[in-house]
Image 1 (cartoon, helix red, strand yellow):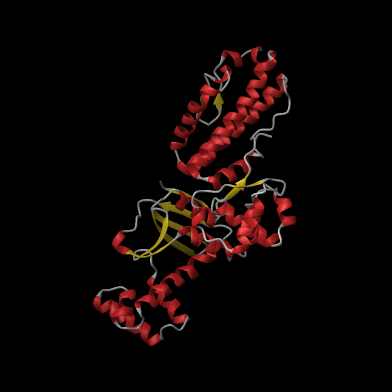
Image 2: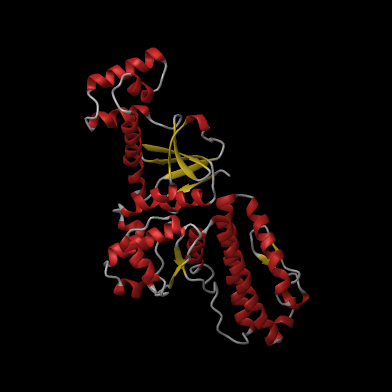
Amino acid sequence: MFFSGNLAETPFSFLLFRIWNSHKSGLLKIQREHQTKNIAFQRGSIVIDKTSFNETSFLDFLTEKKIILLSSKKKCKNHCQKNQCSIIRSFIELSFLDPVKLWSFIKEFFNVEYLPCFDWPEGEYTFDPESIPQETDILLRIPTMDFIWQGTRQMQNESIIQNFLPQETDMIQVLSPHYIEHIQLELPENYLLNLMRQQKNLKTLYALSELGIKETQKIIFGFISSGIAGPSQRKVMEISPEYPSQVDITKFFKAFNDKCSFIFKYISKEIGPVAMNVLEKTIDDIRPHLPPVFQKMQIGLNGKIEMNSPLFKGETAFSNGVIRKDLLEGFNEILVAEVLAVKKTLGNIHEATLVKNLENIGE
């Protein structure tokens, strides 16, 4: 599925995880100022293929590192033109580089080109699923999760890290996904992961961690980027009155629908018109478990819930304290179900981002 956005809203590491986690194939294109980066994917794995490989930049890279001389560079270009072959093939046919070393330089070149993207604060991106790399064009595969951690560990832009961490008072939860055993965590990362399993809030973690605040934040950012951790599940709406008044109901219903509308817009931006089908199915699944007042509800075109129940009309809903209490609890159950639908559709990172944004919606 085609999608687009900006790194200011979805950091590079989050974007890579989304593609990996959904096993997507296609071409990711990122543009920032005068720079353009293209990364090919095959079922979620990064691949370096002949169509997206920048041979000119690779030649410059080898020349700057003094791997080849300027005279060899010129001979390679002439050989390519004469024999209609690639730069890579010309290196081998001219015996300038051993194949094993050449492939290691290809990987090193990729790192030099794309590791800086982890620190990009903004940049327009598009993912095109139609541009699928051909199997015969693939030169090298790079494990996406390993690359995410490699990039996160060398990040220098602290603003990105801090902007996409939960609040200090939030609880952080280890999610323990099935793939965690296949991630080669470093010793300090395992140390912090064990500390996080105690369900500490971030402020407490910063105080307890022997790694210091900055390094602790970077590692937590890495855990969130790779779906290993996220904010603990909590209610989306705070409900305090046991039997709320009519004013409370009116206030909460408006806040509830503002949040529903925001969720609809959020998921629509990511998956397009299919978003309505996802949310309608969510409502149908949860409807049997809700009180009678919710049995005839529907989703409007803007994502807001239309109650359509006689129990919600007139003074009935406001004269019965039990119904009013059922309404508030139902509002929260619907919101939690929709947030979980976002998690199931887009992944843990989008869920965490959504919940954080919802805190400021409908206040």
